[in-house]
Amino acid sequence: MFPVAIGLNHRSAPVEIREKMSFHPSQMKEVLRELKSYPGLQGVVILSTCNRTEVYAATTDVEIGIHSIKKFLASHHGIEENLLEQYLCVHTLYDAVRHLFRVVSGLDSMVRGETQILGQVGNAYQQASEAEVTNKAINVLFQNALAVGKRVRTDTLIDQHPVSISYTAVELAKQHFGELKGKGILILGAGEMSTLTAKHLVSAGANTVLVSNRSYEKAVLLAKECSGRAVRFDDMDQYLEEVDIVISATAATHFMLMPEGMQEIMKARKGRPMLLIDIAVPRDIHPDIGKMPFITLFDIDDLRGVVDHHHQEREIAAVNAEKIIEEEMLIFLKWHNSLFIVPTILALQQKGQKIKECQVERALEHLGGLTPKQEKIIQSMASSIVNQILHMPITNLKEYATTSQGHLYTEILQNLFDLDVREEAMHPSLMANQNPGQVSHRR
Image 1 (spheres, rainbow, N blue to C red):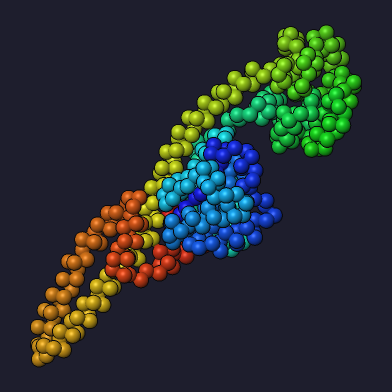
Image 2 (image 1 turned 30 degrees about the horizontal axis):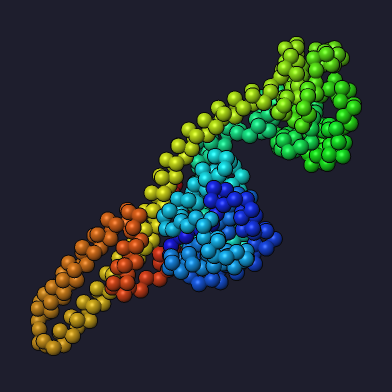
């Protein structure tokens, strides 16, 4: 049973292709069962996000498995295989395992170490399990991958360094006030950046969010998204006297807040401190406002400095994450190869034993009249011959078990000696029946 991963992502395909190749969650159960029906596929999982569409499969024949997956993707999405081919990335055997480990760890994402992909992989595996299209090999692979993704984040803290402007703005507000619950927050603007900021604010615990925009209707829509309240642009000064934090991200071509106006507002506030975060380009808040008493002002350059530093921190964490993945790959490799090798060695020894017993029985029938001592000598000689013939194949196979080609040598040996090794023997139920993230061979 061999792992295969085939798909496309933000590096291999433009957005117009990624859009065509996506799968809607409501259709996933039927789609998974359709995929599983293709030749050579014993277990499947489909991972479909805004930046990637990938099929993970366990197959008994790599070539047939790859052909089936490509045919399925082209047929389901109505794209010619020749056109689709140029966008697809194909990973086989242990390269497929390593790829999944890197994906779930956020190392293959557009933003290094992003957290969302861990949940997306978990959901993809759960959907496949509920559709009953996984097998023991897929179960163990994904349970391992999810555990690896969690270990990478725990050991490296790669996702603890915010790398988006909107998220960083919210983090600065949290650092400034300790917590956002109960703090009055005013968002100026209702565009994409403001929307992202509002979502981060709600996630961070903010429960008093006001939204102001020149188009009141747009302010109302954004306020609904973050369970906030829209306020009219003309009444902005009134609310500036009340709130603790202002995050500004309008599309204005001039300053929205000027020193003169803010002086009056600060008089009304009677020394109550205020945090202003300007993430607009061009800037919304005049820089001189930051020099006023009781006001702290961050602009886009301040936030970019923080983001750049966090990018560096994530790159350092990514190096450590790659080391963890290689450690986990070695553990997985040894375990996976042992699943093939141990039953194969037992089957080879059993076959040698059967041949020996059959031939000794025939020889004793022809010879006749042998003493017990003579029969024992013949039995011992036959056992010695079988053991010596099988010694080198078994010894070499054990050595190959620690390499990435171990399972291939095992398959070859099975074919050469026509061994009957049941799949159940190669995938113990103890391993397959565990919950995600609880694979005993790793810990």
